[in-house]
Image (cartoon, rainbow, N blue to C red; front, side, top):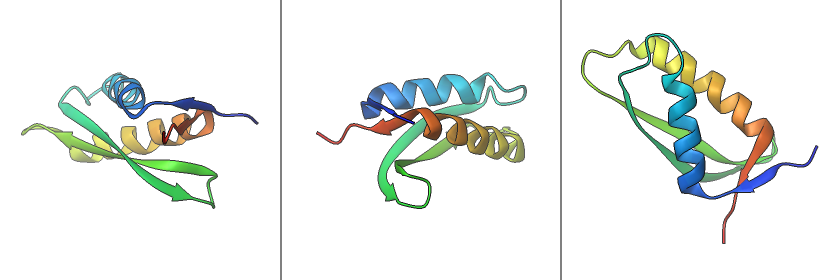
Amino acid sequence: MHKTLISKAQLELIAIEEIRSFPGCEYASSVEVEYQPDRSSDTNWALHVTAREGADLERIHYATKTASDRLKRRYNLRTS
C-alpha cells in the first residue's frame, strides 16, 4: 500500500486532533513528531505527546498508541 508523504507540521496537527478526539484526552497539549526510521513497521516517524496537569495519562497513552498505529498506515514523514 502506498503511503502519503506529509510534512512534520501537518502530521503533528492531524495527530493532536485525533488524540484529543478520544474521550478523556482533552488535556493532551502538544504532539511532537520525531524522525525515526523503523523497518519493522515500514515507517519513519514516532509520536511524543505532552499533557497538562490533571490529565488521565493512561487514557492519553492509549489514544496516542491507537492514533499512531492508524496514522502510520497512512503517512510517512517527508524528510526534505
